[in-house]
Amino acid sequence: MRVRLALWVLTLVILVGVIGYRALGLTWFEALYQTAITVTTVGFGEIGSAEHVDNGYRAFTLVLVFGGVSAALYTLGVTVEVLVEGSVNDGLRLRKEQRMIDDMSNHIVIAGAGRVGRSIAEYVRRHGAELVIIDRGEGSALDHAVVEGNATDDEVLERAGILRAATLIAALDSDADNLYVTLSARALNPGLFIVVRTDRQANESKFFQAGANRVVNPHQIGGSRMGAIAMHPTVAEFLDEVLHDDSHDVQISEIQVPAGISRRLLGDVLGALDDPPVTLAVRDSEHGYTPLPRSDHELDGGDVLVVLGAKEQVKALGAVLR
Image (cartoon, one colour):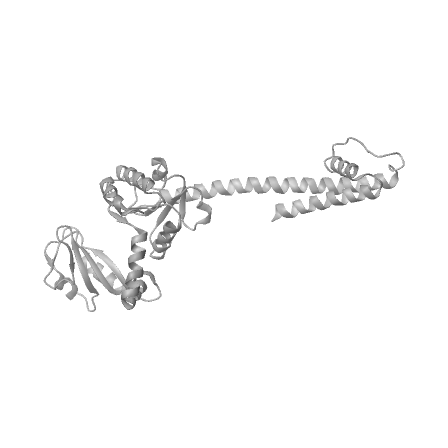
């Protein structure tokens, strides 16, 4: 805004100078030339015939010198200040963000800030998780910690804290880039949980071979969701509200059974609560999912409970398991 104002002032001074000298008898080109050398203080001397260069001519030049030089210096000063201030602020912002990222652990790294990446970031932010976004140049437009660079570069992944992260979401536009990021991230952090976006279902096996834990095709999911809305609108609406709407207290959550627990009955765990959540399923490494498990279902360390209930119910169940 200040630069724009300064340029308008300088332009106005030049226009006044040209019109003034034209009124004093110079041609349009001579008026522009005399204005330019006066405002810039080049000092080539007065132009025009002797009859034009009188006291009025010199008085106008004197006014133009003070006004023009002031406007020019003001414009130059504001421009330099804005450029220097912008560089300094950018540098301070980047250093501050990097220090914040260096202090993170068990966070989520999102590679790509396109439409899919931004939607993921918004969902993660709503659920209170720490995240870092890697993007090639849109850092200042995002409200999250950002590492500007190419996510296929190991150095960029390390600056995003990939060695300390819990999860990587590769949401770049290219399957080839996502595959490369998966390979690099798995080599840097073998314990990382990796979720990858793909545009072609045929590439799914390649991502699993590269080290991905989950592969997601947004187009396929979008189509399935539209079909579910058409066939089961009430169920689809309920699941959407539970998963994406924070205005109510009901949620679907997953709770991992701590290591060290062995053959503990689900009924005993739920019986320790006055108002337990609904257990929709239990996932274990050997048998996959058990939907609507019975009370005599045995829980072991590493199993994951998928539950439906209020936040306090879910929190209480997690406390009992711990």
